[in-house]
Image 1 (cartoon, helix red, strand yellow):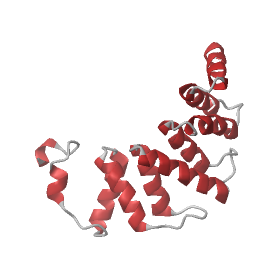
Image 2: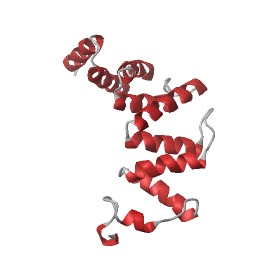
Image 3: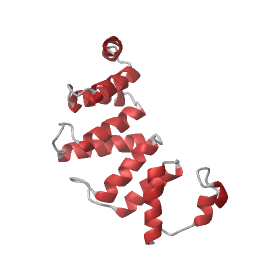
Image 4: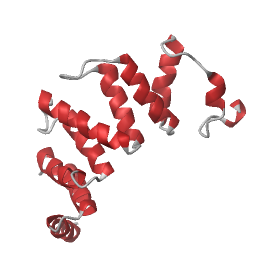
Length: 162
């Protein structure tokens, strides 16, 4: 792992977005390294338009950059911004994360049911099973107009419902 890390570090210093992303993952999973160091690598790759880095950075910011401490309001805003960038690139997990963020609210982001439903529906249509369960709960509560026929034709629907 040390050898791989050293290669990723050199490639990261040379500006390679994928190396910066992978180095961010290495730092994030290393208990000796703080989330802020991982976030720095993700931010370098995100600045180059790397979609997964936008998602990972957004998720990291919403969880708190200092392990064991809640995120600051600035971190939450930064997280939302990066998740929105990933969602624009059709990243399903980013859409799910945004849906949950708007569903529950966090820091300066107030709960917004319409935004939550919008992002959860998009993630569900992209095949995310967690989003499908969450959007189903909205349908069950009657928050969203139900249109079962449109769900039957979706590729992730159960075969017996088609």
